[in-house]
Length: 96
Image (tube, rainbow, N blue to C red; front, side, top):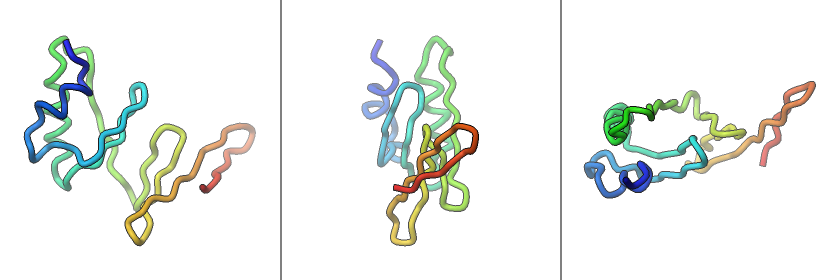
């Protein structure tokens, strides 16, 4: 059976196909049309016949979205600014 990330581009309805799909281990960064995230999540959860994988999602809040050890910030011109979380005694944000 193909992996879910390989099945998505071939089987997703046109109105649900992500504009961007990046996966690292069990985290996925995707860009989808507004209002389609819930339907896409339902579609993804139906792809796994074994029912062992459940997809969830986080929606950008205030122009920010956490992903892995990054905080993605939407800029006014539509670009992205990345901040890296560094942990230790004092949490630190490093902008790049």
